[in-house]
Image 1 (cartoon, rainbow, N blue to C red):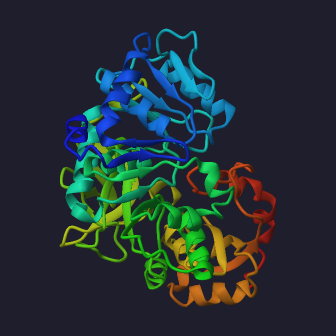
Image 2 (tube, rainbow, N blue to C red):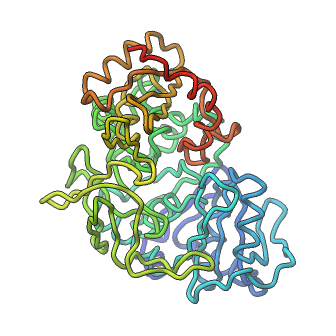
Length: 453
């Protein structure tokens, strides 16, 4: 499906571009075939490049050659990288030094037949799981995204997330190419260490679509408030962690067309999505046309998710997502939090910390937050103030007014920013909850004396 679509687009339309290369649809298949020829000795390909046209071409070449491809996130630790290489049995790795033989000849665990891509989660341990996906699952997701978005998606898609992140790889590049977009693949360094150049890059590329995680959305909102609107943007998909509807409304009032979605690696990225045609604040949108889901004991389950299993573990017919949520009468999906993160206070009330955190993060004074308080009489939070923010207590008080008493934050501690370098943030912007709480264990154990608010 994907390759047949590529040759149907006007040959003079730009398909891929970065700071050095511009490639038209008319030349795309030729460049892919050139790389297919160079993969003749490769059994499993590891991709360790920054975002670029070359990354996309080698990824597409592996897909065309039916060679399993392992995108290697540059934000992985050495331990995680070593685990991924050996678990997947990567025989050759493509980096800035070229295509190199790793010396490995077979994966430690036999890969499921039909594996086209192995995506490793950016989890909190040194041994993230390798999710094995067939080509059909990724094409199905990409085609469904194009179907629900229609013409809104065809334009200039700016890749902002690392291409090694499945969401950008499938929903960004594959869906973009199926739709006939020009896909912009700027190296991540061009955005700046803290994405401080994001506004400039989006403005320069005249991006009409982009995929973000909430952390980066908040950074862009701050930039828009200073540098002005981005009028070319038509669609901004945001996912990865729970968003408070207030934040989405704030973004839209700034002219940012933000729509929340939800995805799982086992489902080849996107599961549900709000669109300009069908949108409900507080939900993560309607299921994509090919997705079937149900709610069992409060947990979201996906029927026939499409993946082939984890490395060394077969897939099951029904995937337990680990996420709590519901489906309303109109088919919109809600995600309330992670099942394993649910806090139970000493009063017996169950609280998803993501719910309270999303409310806190809707405040412009709060940049990051982690809520905790399992077995305690009240909830507390570790709060990273936004630059220049004052009166954090006032911000907490304002948020508490929107929450029931049992979910209010009664105590908080301001802490330094969570970062990838400090191992308190994943490469895709999610706080590493366990690591952060372990880091502040002593402070947390000493603080339950009395609430400050």
